[in-house]
Every structure is written in C-alpha cells, then in structure tokens.
Amino acid sequence: MKIKREVIKALLEIAKNYHPSEFIALLGGKRDEISEIIFLPFISGNLSALINLDVLPIGISVLGTVHSHPSPSCEPSEEDLELFSRFGKYHIIVCYPYRENCWKCYDRKGAEVKPEVV
Image 1 (spheres, rainbow, N blue to C red):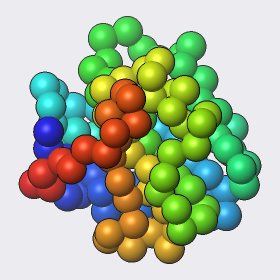
Image 2 (image 1 turned 90 degrees about the horizontal axis):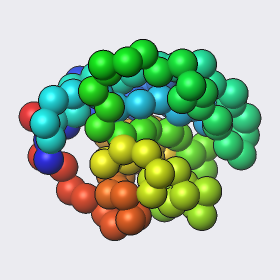
Image 3 (image 1 turned 90 degrees about the vertical axis):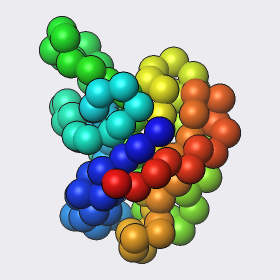
Image 4 (image 1 turned 60 degrees about the vertical axis):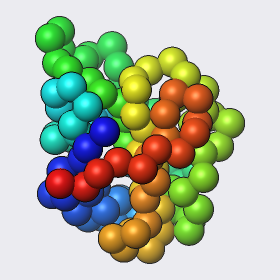
C-alpha cells in the first residue's frame, strides 16, 4: 500500500485550516496507491464530522476515508471503527498539531497499516 507525499501534506494543511473542527473526506486512487482526496458535502464539529456518501458520483474509485482529530491522538474511536468496517479499505486519521508525523493509517478492522510514502 502506497500514498503520495503530496496527499499527506494536503491532508495536514486541510486539518489545520478546519481546526478546531474535524474534517472528513474520501481517499481515491488506483489499486493500492492513494493519490487523491475526494471531497463530498460534510458536517463538521469539534467532536465529529459526518460525510454525505449519497452524493458520491458513480465510477469514482474510493480506497477509504480520511478525517482529522483536533486532539493529539490519532487513535480511532468506536465511531471511527464503525465507519472503517462499513466503507473502504484504508482509513487515515490526522491529528493535532498536524505535523508531518501526525497521522496514522488503519485497515477495515482498525489495525494500523504502515503505507509507503512515495
């Protein structure tokens, strides 16, 4: 599994811009390489973010989700694990203070995955 360095940088910047609220988006790409961020309408708050998956265009390749935690913990909550199990293969959480090492990736079951940054 791989992820583009530019995607990580963009995710951290987006999280900074939404802080102290959370943001949520989808991860796109081909095969096992995340190369884009897909934004859909979402509702954001300090404790959660909800995305409207009903407006996802047909034919878009979605590999997973990404959202931010306005706290210094990248550990998934019970709600996060529920989302992971229902949608996508990979899930990224970016956390405060949104520096280069302030993110983690998880699989559908909530096990940490260490993607290769390319």
